[in-house]
Image 1 (cartoon, rainbow, N blue to C red):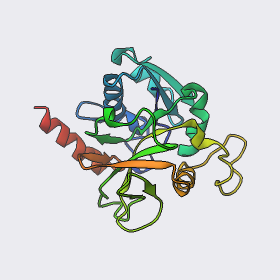
Image 2: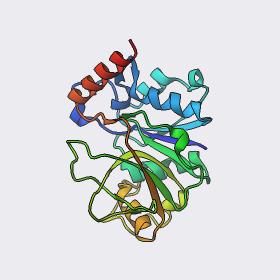
Image 3: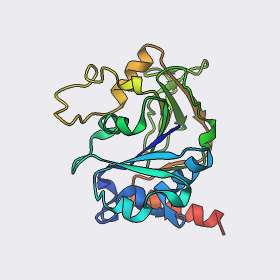
Length: 233
C-alpha cells in the first residue's frame, strides 16, 4: 500500500511559527510532526509515500530527504504557490499513488492510532478513522453506525481524524459535487466527495478512542510537545 501525507497547507493559524517552517515540519517531542507518521508508515510495510506540498515546499526535501532514513521512498507532489485543498491535492497526487487503495493522513495531526488496523481493501470507496470531538470542534463531522457505515448526518457525530484509506474511484466524477468553478488546476475539498460516498453506502469507519491531537494552534503544539517529552524521559 502507498500513502499520501497532506502537507500543503499554509499554516496561517500557526504564525509566526510557520513563517519559515511548514506546519508538518514543526517539531513535537524532538521530531517533526510528519516524521511520526513516516516512522509508523514504514513500520507497517509502506514503501512509497507521496507528500503534497505548496507553502515553503523546498523545506520538505531539505529536512526529510528521499525518505531512506525510514526505509521509505518519498515522492513530492508540488501544487504550486496555492494549495489545492484536500480533494484537489489528492486528485493531483493520484498519478503517483496508482490504481490501488491508498492510506492518507493529515500531516498536522499526532495520534497513537496504529495504522496496521486500517483495512488494505475498504468495503466501499473510503474507510475513515473517527475520534471523540475535541473542545475546538464540539459538533463533530460524521456519524458512525453500529454496522460500521458512516453517515453524513444524524445525532452523536464524531470528528474525522484525518486518517483514512481510499480507493481512487472516490474521485471519479469529482466535478459533480463540487460547487462553483474549481479552476484549471482543480482546487476543492474532499468532504463533498466523502458525503457522496456516504449517501450510496460506500463509506465505512471506526472509532479510535486513544490519543489524537489536531495541531492547529501554537498552544496545542506546545502542549503536545510537553506531553511527548514527558513520556519519553
